Length: 556
Image 1 (tube, rainbow, N blue to C red):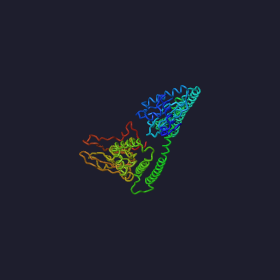
Image 2: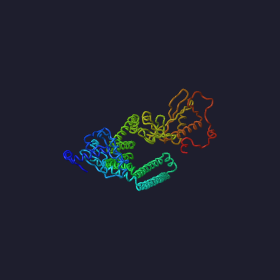
Image 3: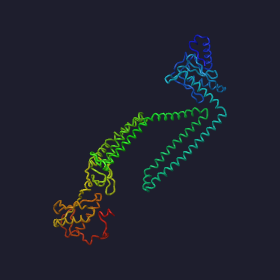
Image 4: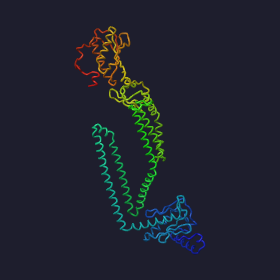
């Protein structure tokens, strides 16, 4: 390559001669010479890319001697095609004349590259662009010449068929492996729940957990299959000179993606290490908190401000706050946490929480009031509004009650706070809770007899406490009758309907036996004959003697 200095070209006759020869050669092929280009090259505001044999050679951006970039690339393509038809593929070199460069093939000028053709903003230089252009042109000419030989075509076909066959075998292997893995997942899940009975298997199928596992496995194998297809296509395209640029671009894209992922993973390692450290510290603290509160709940440790019944919800609250704090601390170290996409998702989640937080906060605060006021306890028999049953769960948002009909009723915590709540079990285990039942009897029956009959019925009923003892009160003296109320303490509040049913049956039997008429619900006139059931008719068909009633029904 000849690199004369510009001042020598102006003063030396030999340099002037070389410029003249270059100008004449460029004019012969319809392209401007470097010397002419130096004087008459200017930016055009448009660009045109020279592509030869499916390969990008160079991008021109200047108008030279009135010829636009598209005209210059068109002339260069015609020149290269002519050279290829004549079997001329090299050598390829560049000649620097003044501030421009002439690219030649077998000493014949193909195109001139001028300073306005160079994109200086992207860091290009004239020498680098010229060297890259020459290298790309050598590759394109060599591949164009090789593509016309029978040996290259046959070799490309054999290699392509081999690559496609291997790819097809790999895909088929993935399909077989997918089926085997899915069958193993199903068999493993059924084997795990097999010892738990049919009910557990039905629950597992209803939860569609197996379907989720199978879909995840299918997705992984589908991704692996797509990767195999991509690699096979890349290999096949690279076996033919004309399609080799496409294969190279696909391979470069895949390698660039892999390199980018590897670099990002390497850059993320310090942050991930910090996240892992925060996770381990938070987990250790959460376990320590759980151990301490469990000790309070079981009575091994006594705390002044925390009661055993509030230890479990307080532990959950403290653990949740610990994990929230740990997440906030680890957030800046997560990969991608500073990207706009990550921030957008965070804003979206924040908006959702804000829009739905009014009712949520109300329920949560009501749950705190229920928990720390110790108004309810799990296992207690309570009445909340119209719902009566045993408390099975005290949650952050709701309270669950199992009724005597085995119904599970979910009551929002805000509703629990707004309703009147009666806990029958709070003092029932120690002093007992009294439950009333009333009858109305006419004034012509001695009240002492009524008291004795009611107390006798209580004594014959199982499921009632001996202490405190049952007692009778005359609650009202109405116009036509007296209202008597028997107060009894139940052994188990959750069996109230059965115990009270047995008590009512004993009351009827005793009142019928002693000829006392029950005037409930209203007493208006004295009947002609007492409204009682004779003892001989107590077990009229289809009733049978000894049939279980009341509390006995529950035990049977």
